[in-house]
Length: 448
Image (cartoon, rainbow, N blue to C red; front, side):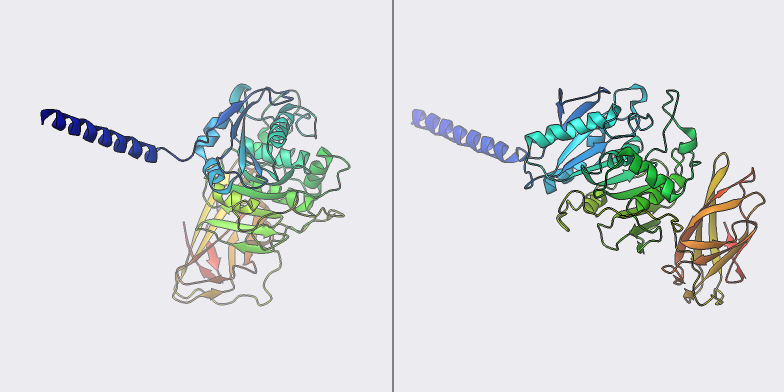
């Protein structure tokens, strides 16, 4: 009997151990994908490092996404700090994470070698990474994204290799060739401060000069920028819009505008759909440390399955760039001049972000009344020495002294207790103050 009891105890223990092992097996993560460093990936003139993320489940002809980090960052840091890898698990694309190894860990977007196709430096190294992946997987389209230095590199890659990249998403960057320097300097203060202002034609010509003679399709571009960016100042956002609309042969007047979330203004150019040739998102009050919305970038690329892209790239090239590009925002005032005063009052928030000889003004108009305002003009007097250079979400006339801002076609109605955001970039001669008072449709507003 004692032997039987001992035998039963042993059998019971064995079954419990087996059950425990089974439960441990079930708890093991299903995914074994991990970030892996790749060496000897090809021509690497600037000694970049390459990290690769390949999800366990790849899409048919998986896309390649080049995700480029910020200054002081690394590929692994960008991998862990963004959602591009987790979204790759869901949608089956491959992610390349380059790492800069020079002092400061910024990418070369300033040398003459970097700003032309196959000229050398970091873009050539990154293209070696792309070709490495293409040779080992049956891949499809190629995309680029990045933040700060990585956003600058996104602009450079799309300009240098328009036949390779289908689209890009640049978070807080500057236009292609804006950061160009001479004498070995790696920092361009004039560009960083938003002081390099060119026509759309001039910006477009710089992209076209990166690959002379190219007549094929051009990559789509998504741009993100915070109005309070203290490192790469907000005027660079408007200059990027100028550049990429010109590259596509488009007007700078948006074909679609909406507010995807509070404080964000999204404009599209050349189309109203989610994969327009150019999409720009202005982020009210956001600094250089802006959130990287990976899901929206992947949506713009068409990798989320909502609108599968075909071909590479996706838009036809312009036959002739516009010689006199229109202004960035609609400039025509409404056909019926607004006269309705805001019943119940109004409030205006007016925030100035200034640098050496320029500034941006972010203005929020709030209807404090119980009835909607249908059509509006905001009147104010600029301090002496301030001159408006460009604006958004309103038309401004004249550009100095006593100014009137009129609503655009898409934001003329302000519901009760609702707000609308507008703003402008201006030059100044030392006085960076704000107006002493403002009025909406002839009624004085509370100014803060």
